Amino acid sequence: MATTIRGGEWIGSLLVRYPRATVAVERMEMLMQDTPDGTLVQHGPIFLEGDAPQLRLPEWSVSDTLEKIEVDGLTYTFPDSENGIADVSFAIARGSFTVVTGRIGSGKTTLLRRMLGLLPKQDGQIRWNGTTVDNPDDFFVPSRSAYILQIPGSLQRLAKRQPADGTARRERIQHRRRHCSRGDGG
Image 1 (cartoon, rainbow, N blue to C red):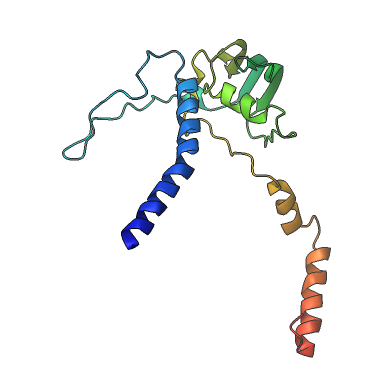
Image 2 (spheres, rainbow, N blue to C red):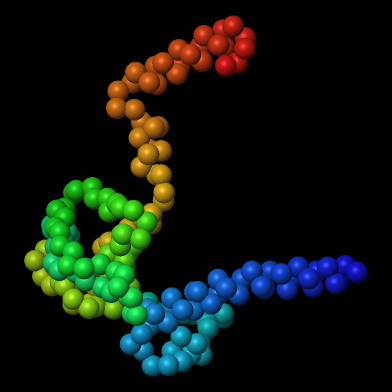
């Protein structure tokens, strides 16, 4: 009986994971559009024992320090769709705090993925300190760039936790003191 129940749990788990795996494979195939068929599932060495090969680390120079990033006419339209981004242009200076915001489906994630080279180039230019970035997927790597995924409501929660002045905080503290001194814990 226990074996049957565990077998049922395993099948249920498999049925739940299958659609997720399908979506994951489709996304990986989209990212690997320009590679030969079979690359995604190509067999290769796994280094369970012994030394792993040396990692190829990017070489850094003073020009890697951001002064200004410019995006000019960036465009990406999803295959068999009219959805995407069109002719997006902006400039961001070093030291600025930039938030890309908009409604669901407005193109925020598409813009960032296109900038990072996670979507194929269609049109537009990205310049780092005035130099065109030809291969953003090789250029925009951790420690040179990063982004935080959309977390709905995160900016509102931040604003609620840090009032512009201390008035709201003082009022909450006074309220708690009054209720605690009466013994009702309020």
